[in-house]
Each structure stands twice: as C-alpha cells, then as structure tokens.
Length: 490
Image (cartoon, rainbow, N blue to C red; front, side, top):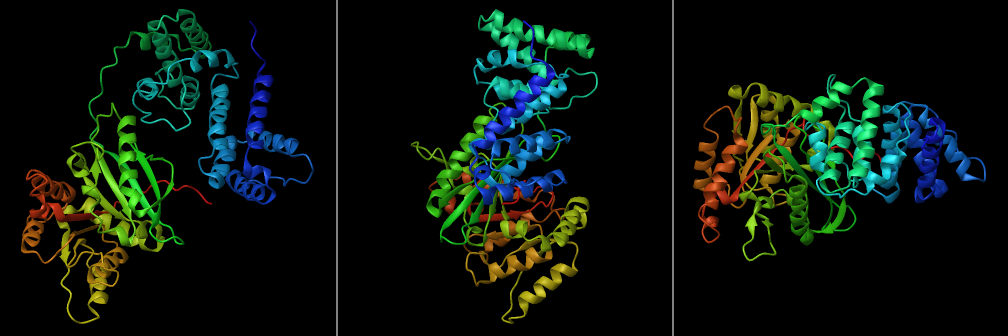
C-alpha cells in the first residue's frame, strides 16, 4: 500500500497541532493569547504577526507554518505555551506532535503512520527500560508525555547517536519487534522489522542493524555519579502555612539534565505525605537504576530546621522507616537559589571547596553580646576566601534568633556548607561530633561523614536514637552547579 506524500504528512501534522492549540484556554482568550504570542516571539527571536481577524484557525495555521520554517520552531511554540499553562492537557498533546515532526525529518519525510497502530497496541510496561537499552543508557528517563510505544519511538527519533551506532529509535523498533514476537504477534513484529530494513538500506546502516541484532548487551557498570531527587517547598505569599511543592529528578550520568515534575499547592501538614508519594513514584521510575540516590530539600527560612531526613517512608505500614535509612539527605536554601545577587560569591566559595579542599576550613560562629557581631561575621566570611563551612551557634528556627542571622551572613558571603544541631548547638556532644567530622581539613567528604553519624543513631533503633547526636545533625550543602531547571516565565 502506497504511503502518504511528504507534503500530505507535513500538512496533516500541522493540522493536528492547530487542532490541539484550539483546545487551549490560553489561545482562545484574547489577553492570554497575546501573552503567549509575545513569549513565542521571544523564543523564535522573530516577530509573530498578531491576530487581527475574526477567524482564529487560519491565523493559528499560519503561526504553525512559520514555526516549522525555523529549526527548533515547533518546540519554541510548545515551550512558550508551557510557560503560561505549565503541564496542561494541551501541552501534553502537543509535545508528541513536535516529536513526530522531528521523527519525519529524521527518516527523510517517510510516512510513519503505519507504525502507529502497532506501537500503540504494545503494553506500556518497561518502556523506560527499553528506551535506556535502545539509547545505550544515554536516555535515563522519559518525559511525562511518553506513555505509549509510539510516543517513545517518536521521542527517540530526536536523540543523537554516535557515528557507527544504530540510532536509538531504530534500536527501539528492533526491541519492540522482539517483544511482539514473544507475545505471538508475528505480523505486527514484521511491520516494524520491514520498516527498519527499508530505512537501514536508505541510510546505509545495514551493518549497524546486523551488529545490533547480534549484540548481547552486557549490563553497564554502575555509575559513580549519583541520581538526585530535588524537592522544593516555596511559600505561598498570600495564604499562610501553604506551599508550592515542586520536584526534579536527575539521573543522567553524562550531564545535569533534571526532569521537572508537577507542582502542587499544599498545606504545611500535607508535605510529609506528599514527599513520601514523590519518593515512591521516583523509585518506581528508577527501578533498574544502579546509581546511588541523594535527596535534596530546597527549603524556605521557616522550614530550614525541619528534620526532613527523619520523615517517614512506608508510613501506612506497621513498620515505617525514616528517609535517612535509605538516602543521604541534605537541605538547601530557596532564598539563595532565588537571589541572583548572592550567586557570584557562592560560586567563588564552591570553587574553593571543590578545587582546593585541602586549603579550605570551617568557621565556628561564637556570638558576642555586641549587636555588631553579625556584621563582622559576614565581613570575616567574605574576607576569608578559604572559609567554606559555617558551624552555627544556634538552630535557625527562630526568626529573630542568632541562628537565622548566622545563616543570612553565610548566604550573603557565599558559604556553601553549614552545619548545626537542630535543638542545641551548645551540646558538648555536638561540638565533639563536629570536631571529628571536620578534622580532615579537606571537607570534601562532609556529607558522607554527617551520614555516618546519622547511621550510628539509626543503629540504636527508634527507642534510643533521640539520645544520639546523629539524630539531630543538620547539614546545608549548596552546589551552585546543580540548580533545578526553571519552569520558565509565567
């Protein structure tokens, strides 16, 4: 059966994009449509003609057509709408269409339509595992809109592959064909294999397909680069005790490419349960991940002293366990992340800690009665470029207390690491523990050493761990090179 012409394939894709856009509340309303149009013009770095008629669809078709003439134009179109609508149903419908446009590009304007029913009929289990295998672990996690084999295939068609290696999308088709054969669907499997044979001939990749089919795919060695689950609580500036909870998952061992999750609006008492659900979902996505996982909590002032590492997993069971049993946990400052004016000294201090750890040292805060103490603390931290860790004299829970003012001085001075006792920084056991933690002047293993003390507390069990100083150790460790990806302008 003869496929569609390249022009028809493109035109039908543009029509599908326009259909999706017409379902958007942003596009249907004049004021929000203008916001989107302005954002799109900025993304394209080119003007977008404003809507001036009485028929919206022809204007949208023209906008889409103009975007297709720009290299990344369709992605700019969806990204600018995502800035306004976040993860709306329209945005989720548009991203696979952008992927399909790029897939048609990759396969030299081939009609991919006959692959769609075969890949849609595949089960959705193990798609992420298949994508990792097809990409030789370069794709660690799929976007939220990749729910079917068809969507995963389209997504992988936009992934680069090294010379001499079968493209991930074609490797995924080979894996899918094998899966269909195992399920007794030989005719469906042959559709995928026939497409692969045709494309390898057209692209001169016959040998690469044969090499792939003969590979035994040894399991790669576990990466030494940790995966991160970053969880952020941003206060609602209008409603007290309510927060916007955002999260990012990062598991790409080749670079920092965090995947942003959904943002939800919750009350203070709902946060522990929401975090527990996020961790469970991340573990499901990372079921075959061989890297260690680190939890980072990005906290506002009022939650900085919250013992988040002792929040529960499996809280609905008879034997819940604290997060610290399974993960290293550090806290970070949302104020610092959002205050760009503090970032230059932060980068300087971090480079000092990372590049010259043996030449770095902590600073113990010892407030005097003099009100000018905190001024001089900030001055000394700024003047001493080797001071990369601040030991607080009080926990930062009280809004007007010494601990809060010490943290502020440290943030302004760019100090990347701070340690305190969540209840009593004057406890002799705390001072002894910190002395031992900081005894290797390198400070490079600061989080690991704090983790060892927490494990010592865990070893005493729930009935006695409160008596151990490791139960009360808090560590703020801020890496300026690991920022969550921004949601974009709103």
